[in-house]
Length: 552
Image (cartoon, rainbow, N blue to C red):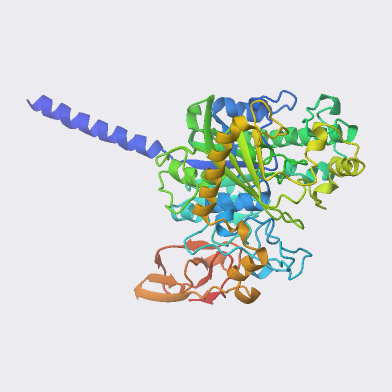
């Protein structure tokens, strides 16, 4: 009997020690976002055999490849607004491209707003630079991660239609790395690969081509001319360079023994970077690649055909980390503990792009694309100084002016647009045969028309509001509202409480060697302080001017 008791005690001790050891070995998950620019799903793993993307193909082989992922807008800033907030840009008035120079992070003292940029709204009134003011409950989802103890780092693009709050990230810079995370602290790291952006078509024109112009695939909506082939070859070569850079980062993660506890998510902020791709509201503008690699290659090689939106990325990250996403999100977690019912449809919007205003909305289900043009008297391809720096774009516009384009290559240069468009991607991947007037598709058109109307009513589509009036709603009398200063209370010895009377404001604070730097700790609960410890704090609400810095 004594021996049995001794055995039980020893077994219990060994079992307890083993479980404790296992728990100590378990590391919190890290998240890495590989974010690229202006690129549809034209990787090797998506069936393109011309572009060589071995690193991303390997990522797809070791992870889950999504075939029906879509951005909410076919251009950077409104799309990234949806990603960082988890909300439709058209719901919150962030749908116009772009509201100001917020590509990267600026301190509150560095932010400027030009009152005249040569842009007018649909009523002909001046549009100054401004910042979208979101409802008080809408904040960057990264603040939730910071509250949960994550180090958040962005290398290095923001572009959210408002200046990124200093509370959103631990650091935003062109040099920050996951390696900068404090020891023992999990991280959420975003690496933005800028080389595939449309501007790199002309900025990298003298770089060697790794894809030959004669080998590229020319979409049916482009004339097959040397300028088109050369720029597509440049686009393909830039994608291959991006893939090489991805490979370098993956190698770093592997060498640092991080692949076994890091979720890696690769995506593009919207569709392609050429004419009738970027800024388009159809499949070419919204369809994006999305690949997720899990630790230990879980679900390796799986292909997921569900409809997902880029604004689902934030809630999905939270869900994968067992953090419940806020209820107000339009985004839906598609993996993790809080996985939601899959979407049946994706919705897209297109409004002002730089100096030109239009209004289009779309419905996509992976097979069909429905587009409604609210300003059908305008041409489909409008003039845009920025994109015409791409040689082929300028050439095609000139050929159209000379009436030298024929057949499918002339389709996108329609002088006016039909009220409705419908494309069958299975039989018409380039969206050049409009089925909207075909009686065989009347029932389908009616279905999408109703779905779009219901969606617009549900979100209160701000595209119907002239932009000048929209700015007045954000900034009454065109004056940016100011976040109130932080106040301090000392409810009990050694504890400091901070508050701000501006509803929805976030508070950042600095202490010790951080005072005077760009790094602000996120305040979310009373902090412990030592006697004579100096604290500085300031508050910010999205779209507001930051408060002054106050001292304790």
